[in-house]
Image (cartoon, rainbow, N blue to C red; front, side):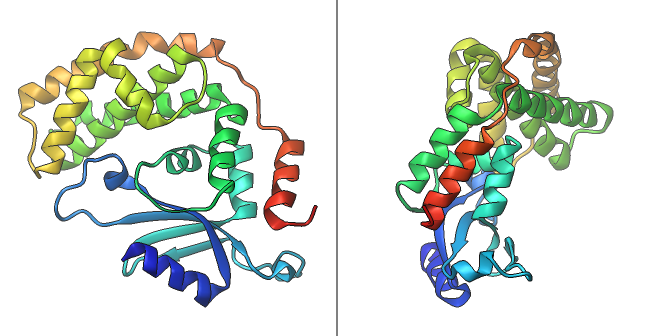
Length: 248
């Protein structure tokens, strides 16, 4: 149904969707029976005049019905890639893909692996981890705090994976790799995911145990300064943009 809906959007808005995926809980396999769909996609306008007009065509398209969906124009997408944007990173490697034009999809993943800044991504996930952990620690544990704890643990597993491998790969692979190098925290994440899928709540004892493990992992933070601080190549991105738009 979602793929058919996206195809209708292409005709209605005269765009080509180059990549579309599920984000949010369904991408992370923590959705419950009542979870909404959270669709993300990348598009280009079919009429190149849209890129030459003084009044630019929309570079972001949003819907709340029938699905929660957001689409980024290719210019917007490449601008975000230049900033090592974590949202584009997570979407590119989503296991739930609805549309994937080639060679665009393979090139997208390749650019992220080769051009993203490991340091920038690491700092993002460490900040996400720290912010959510503080919220969980200072308030009564409930469904909202459980969601924040999931975000905090996931961010820690991804950031520690970046630190361990010193390169960019799928965030979903980073989490799976944590079963080896952070087994206790990985087990805690699996427990959180299972509890969330079943619309349940961890006991305070279970939550405290995971919070303790997460707080103890903070010692890794200083090592992040050794990660590569390179930024994506503007020349490569501009060349790729011309290829995508077919104006070489």
